[in-house]
Amino acid sequence: MIRRLPQSRDRGIPEATVARLPLYLRALTGMAERGVATVSSEDLALAAGVNSAKLRKDLSHLGSYGTRGVGYDVEYLIYQISRELGLTQDWAVAIVGIGNLGRALANYGGFVSRGFRVAALFDANPEVVGDHIAGLNVEHIDELEAVIERRGVSIVVIATPAAAAQQICDRVIAVGVTSILNFAPTVLSVPEGVDVRKVDLSIELQILAFHEQRKGDRESGGPVMAEGLQQGASA
Image (cartoon, one colour):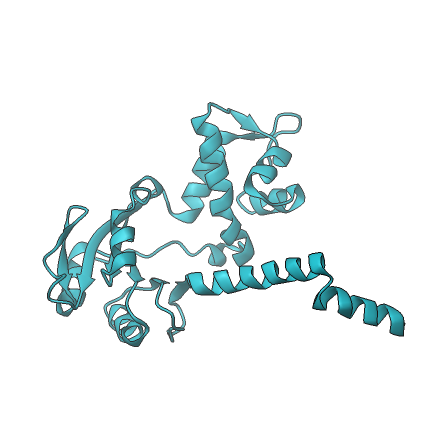
């Protein structure tokens, strides 16, 4: 049986807030490991990289307002955020595409502590099928639907080449999966009710390259500075 992930948006929590909750959880977990019992909104915001007003508004959606002069109880806030994100349960994850990225994801040890259990691995390459990785045998892609149903997979990670991604997406949706993490360099078409999160490292690098180039232009008096001077002269 495939279990559904909780839909925070149905409970009135904005998507932008949902996207920041893992940042707060990571910061809080680090504090708990250091023995911190309470934290102010300012300190938590600093650790998470957001402003404190935004943090307080985000946490108010969880019904957590902190205590004036004391702040937030770290352990309880960890529980609140974990519960909202569905991390108090065990979510079975399947990884499709066991190349370098798929293998790295399968071997990543941080999933279990966050409520995610890699339950199945799939590939189409006969030389990869049958490999033993992180305690699991790589299954042939022909077994996709049967294994997903048998192991109760709720989330599918697609780490295939772009050409294969949409077909894999369609197949897992047909068997009842509604949460997909896409590493393939393509945009997936999905019906309403299916959530897709896309991770594209090349896009992130291109954005960083854009900002790096602008830094260089400013330092050298290049195009960015010249444009500013022209605007000033024409004002």
